Length: 180
Image (cartoon, rainbow, N blue to C red; front, side, top):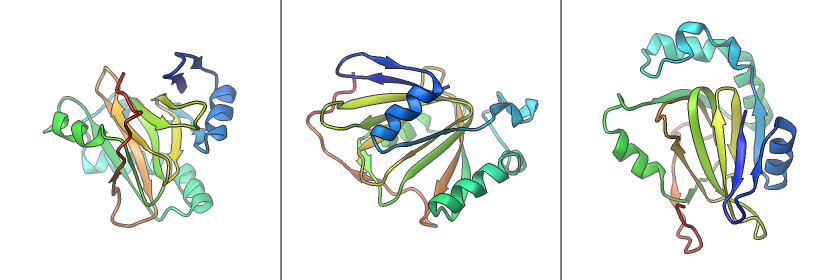
């Protein structure tokens, strides 16, 4: 289950209803899918064949299509990252820059853990959303954020897009941001 850390105050928010309410107040969508639906042989696997990626997409087909219909997403895929991913540190350097998009950034975590760092309202400032299997988040196009891995450096997620060319980041320079 997702947990939030507000960076300015170190306050932590946990529990699905509390997390959902806080993220809704920051205009971020949060949902939770049944992580136990994923077949056991894929639950802790972070190097995936095309067939295994297709199996994950088929497992969550109903949830993906329902979310896509509600939010206008047209395409989706699987991203799998771990220490076995070639060039992982370079990939993470690209991810770990505050940016915005011309569409929502959506991730449905199916295995592992990750973290979104999001710029909240003026009163809140930046906050971390720690995600694990079953957590689904959609950061609106205009909200500055970035995504990275947790200490375990392993994640599998469904990504959904409106634009068929996928993920396009626009750097957001913010002197108020600190990686702490």
